[in-house]
Image (cartoon, rainbow, N blue to C red; front, side):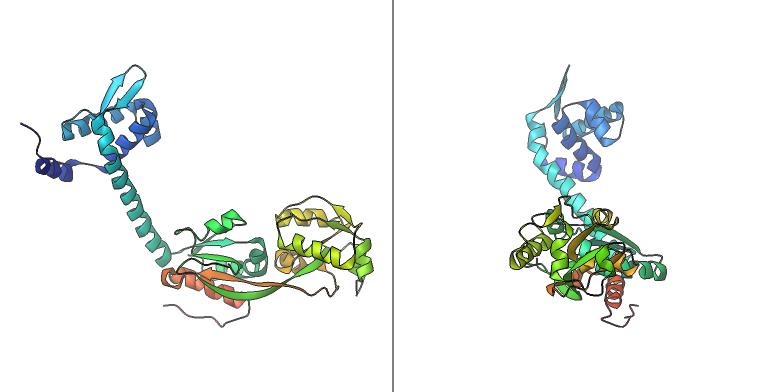
Length: 319
């Protein structure tokens, strides 16, 4: 007697397991019981048992065994998109629930550019960590395409950087710290001992060059053109990693034009000096992007700590 769809549905609702669908997906992709079992973290005999259970449940052969592995039957290929939807929906459900618990619990996921890290996080994180030991702040550094990705889906709770030109639905930007390009050097650099540094001093110095696609490089090239620095002394070690910039400057021979936010931690503890030049190269302010309708208690507490670090607001209480 042919298997009736309603009977099969009742059987699947009561006996089908998510692992059966995962096994179908993995085995269709890898075509090997051994590799599929390894991918799922089970033994090969357990994988064989799982496939046999599914075949008995559906009363149809799903895979043809041969000496090199297995091949899916037409029945397996028909079931494949259904299995993909079931597994995908389950994963999405798990992520939604986990996202809710993250927002209401003790984890805040922060993406930050180098300038925002120096201007905001360097001040805010130590105090916040001491005041809220049960809240975990997970920080990742972003730049370029990784900065773009930070706004995709539910990857981050907040993104610290300059204002984005285009914001996805639900995201808001709050400016917190002003910023500008400044000339810095190690404390041992000869110009660090001068109260006022002249344009002539800068023209005779040796500079660390920056990557071509950066705010600092663009402004530096314009400055060179404006001041007629055609034969400037340059060291071509380019990087957007702040530690590399410090490594290049610390022996006291080089200058660098950088956003103040990037070098603020080193300037504040006296490892670097911001030279008195008066270039007045203002940049867009640094702040935080966040989603008010998806921001839980822990993230709101951290947002308040960023505001306090910027000297913008008094502490706000969240019950």
